[in-house]
Length: 319
View 1: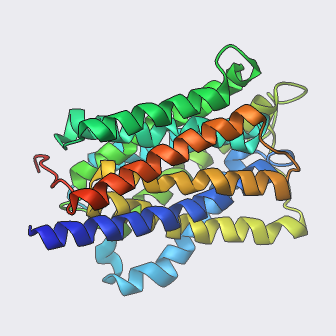
View 2: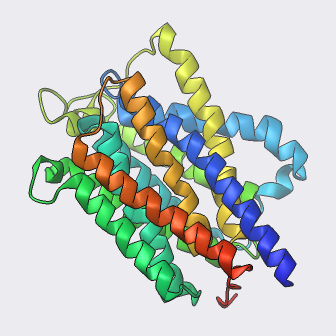
């Protein structure tokens, strides 16, 4: 692979990461908005089902029909599906009990973990200045969540768990990118959501374990019910965006260095603040602003270092 190709792939991957985070940010806002009236597995099932329909009607015809779902790595897709389903479930349960900006801030451990894990598992190179930026970004997360305060309530551990699982999912993506296309990975991601949420709904969908408990547990165990007319458009949009965001995320880590693309996910932070203010009427606390500045500053510095270096470090992982 030539230097120009590596540079182009990294830039395309960064654009995919940015666009994916716009979709994911709406997804987070919508799940928090809907968490007071529906069961988590019901929303996930409807989103996945709509997404599979959109995939079959729009994506499959443009990518060779049924050939797009053929895979040489079924067990890798199963592992990746487990990671992404558990990561999303953990995050959505955290969102039910926490302010949106705080929950998203905790998940910013994920881009830092992706960069670190890319060194450990993929043999990619992260220079000392980028390591320093990663440390600063992690410090920003700590400033926002304030260890030892109310931010470290039990629910705050759920976005942290989501971050770890999300990072692990991206490591699997990097391992299978040579043989599996973005549409193929997107299909098996949505299929994983549909199967897992349907199974959970069969066991807990009658709501017999719900009633007067923690918001996260109530969201998890609430009974399935009819969808209000005003919420139909939100759920349909979630389904369509699930296809787009899954394709974009898969494409991000197929194209570019994990350590290069990860900082572009920081766009989710200002978007979370915007949704918090406009939809939920919540502003970040002063300490949160300081932490956000550290996180965004570290990400911008990493991007600046890439521009100074001229060409990103080629990935050296084994295929």
